[in-house]
Image (cartoon, rainbow, N blue to C red; front, side, top):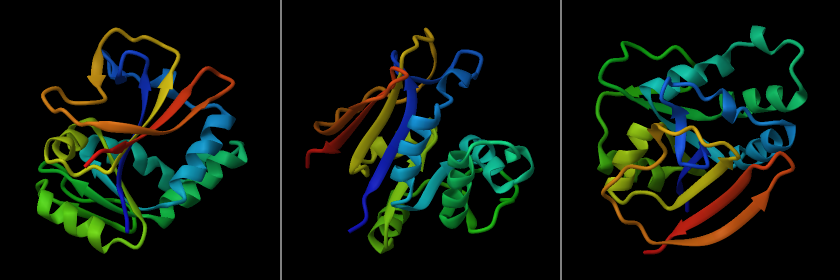
Length: 186
């Protein structure tokens, strides 16, 4: 059975972007990138909010990847092979293959997508993920914590929801990044 997973790269203080919207501090080195690639191979569908979709759509373009290491090209292949569902009221159209647009977040639709999925489903974008957290839809939380404190910005998790978790996996990387995978206790 497929799982709905929220994976994010954060600062130590729990932000995915700083107060200016920058997340350059989150760029993974090759070791972390390979780990992410290996994780993403199990994902068959990405659920995105508009902003994250617009950020991720660059993976459809080969031009910028010239001279990049093989882990970057590998991720592009993984991303292109997955289906994408973008939840947005303001995006006029999607610009990448294997992508569809939904005008509103509907928990029942997400439940059906996960139930019908042949492989895991990932949700991304703090605003969209907050809806899934609030609706109790997530099966796993996965976080790559970077050794940086940014002092404010876009938080990884919403306030106001309690979710009991069980630590299922942890890993330290040479660059100081720490990965943690938590299962939702039902």
